[in-house]
Picture 1 (cartoon, rainbow, N blue to C red):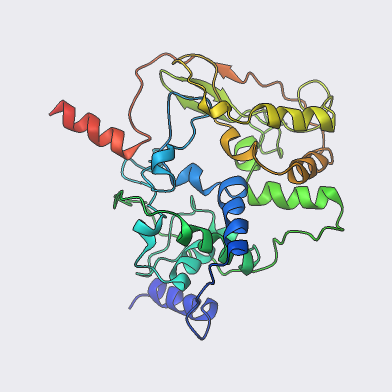
Picture 2 (tube, one colour):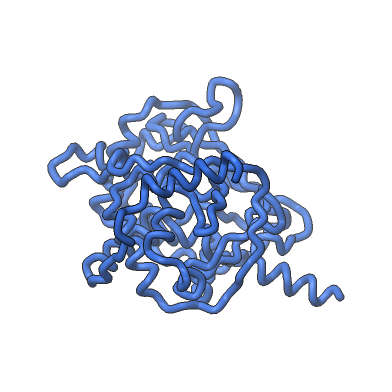
Length: 319
C-alpha cells in the first residue's frame, strides 16, 4: 500500500461519520438542493452535454446531469460522469458526499480538481446534503459510463465545513454577494487576462474561449470601472440584464454569429435577492480598466469534441 493510498484512507476516515450517512429526502431539502445545483454551483454546466447551436451553449435538456461533457483542455477522454441516479445509484450518500467535498471516489482515486471540491468542501455540510437529496430525486437518465482519463496525481482535499457559509439574512448585502460569487466560481472565467497590469486581477475580464467555426468569446470586465466595466451600471440595469436573458438560451445562433459562454441559462434564474447581492459585492472591487472585445468570428471547421455522444457519432459515420 503506497503513501497516497494510505493518505486517502486516513482522510476518508477523518471526514466520514461514525455511522453511514443517510440523507432525508424532504421536499424542503430537495428544493434547496435544486437551487444550489442549477442556479448557484451550476453542476449541469459540466455534467451535461451542451448545445452548440444555441445562445450561451446550454445543457441538452434531455441529458441534463447525465454527463458526457468533454474537458478537451485536459484530454479527449476526460469526460464528466453521469450524476443522475442512473450514474450514482450504486454510490452511498457518504460516498457521494466524500466525492463532492474531498474529491475522493469510492475506489480511493482522487478526482481532477476541475471538479471544484476545494470549494464545495468549504461550504456547509447541510448544503451538500441538500444537493445530494436533489440528485437522488431526479429521473435517472441512461447514459454512459464514459471514459474518465484525467492524467496526473491529485491530492484529496481536507474539508473545512462552514468556512464558506451563506450569511444570515441580517448580514451586509455585499457579504452575501461575496459568498455567491465564490460558490459560483465567477472569477474562474472573469479573472483578468491581458497585459501585466491586468493579469490575474479579480473580475477584470478578457479570458478567451475559442470555438473554431463558432467564434472567439471573451469574458466581460465586471469591475466598477466606469468606461470598460460596469461602473456606470445601476442596480436596476444589472438586474434587468439578467431578467432579459431568461430564456435566451433557447435562441438558435448561426455559426460565426455573436455568442457567449456566460451561463445565462443558470444565473438568469437566480433570485433577485441573490443577484442584487452580487451587484453589491462587485461594486466593492477595485476598478480595473480593461476594454474587452466580447466576440469575434473565428473561422475553422466546427469540431465535435465537447460532447461524447457527438464525437462517437462522428467516429461511427467515418468508418
